[in-house]
Length: 229
DNA sequence: ATCATGCCTTCCACCAGGAA
DNA sequence: TTCCTGGTGGAAGGCATGAT
Image (tube, rainbow, N blue to C red; front, side, top):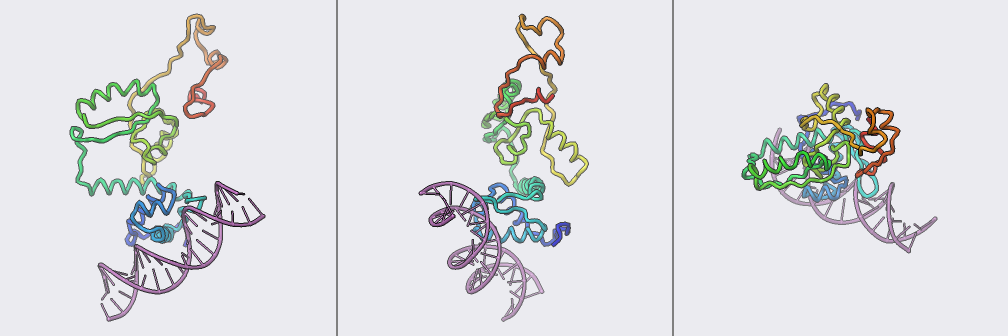
């Protein structure tokens, strides 16, 4: 079956998309089957039908599990978002802050947390007293995987790669974008002791680059966004 | 290098439910 | 009633990985 063959939506079983979503989440058919209350052969069989429908292998064996094909990776955000919207549409639940008891996980840098959390906590205590927050350190410049894997509900930071992708996707209505919003603009400030060799005159880029630096890297990368800039 | 283990795929038989 | 679809359970076999 050619990969370019169009999908017959009239006969597409939405359960296959649930199987696909679960397999992509677990990267393991046995666990996916358990989560879906199916047997492993049933999931394998469902995958076969979806493979036939989409004309792509979707996942292939990789060690003790499976790894997705590029097509599956490209497809997954759309499928997941569609399933989520279906769930929201069919669910009578409406989020009422005053009655909510959710525990939200927020990923951000410590400086961002210092900027945002105090005011946020004030609002939550007043309007959603049952809601709790857990702030985890943000160690990546691209938080989409964190959000995909539901390790965080929200990521706050500067994400140039995400912004670039979102700009590109604005031309593609079929693409699913992550919800995003500009919160504030900020600028970086270089602070030094009075006796520092660079303190006597106007700081230049060359002077800054020539100075010795120490990087605190939560991610383990040997460079930071200031180096990139 | 060999073996054990875990996991996936394929095939088969059988069953249940729905449509024609 | 017959046919189709999709489920379960089981068996056989291939592949990757880790232990020995």
